[in-house]
Amino acid sequence: MQPRRFKKFKLLEKRLIEDAKRWREEARLLLPGAAREALLRKAKQAETAAQASEWLRAPGLQAPR
Image 1 (cartoon, rainbow, N blue to C red):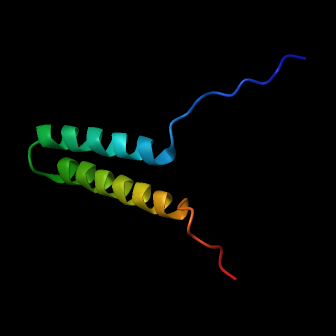
Image 2 (cartoon, rainbow, N blue to C red; image 1 turned 90 degrees about the horizontal axis):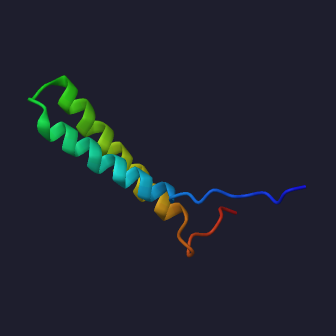
């Protein structure tokens, strides 16, 4: 048997932040309208998800009792 190989992957938070930056750049190039607002909303949601994920992984966080 061959040993299992694990792919290196980026942390979820890092991917979300990179996506948010990319979406904000794309939105900056668009004219004001529904498409631009959708990209900005998507970027904001990604940033919020990254913050929530980081908070949940915090070492001081305790499980509910």
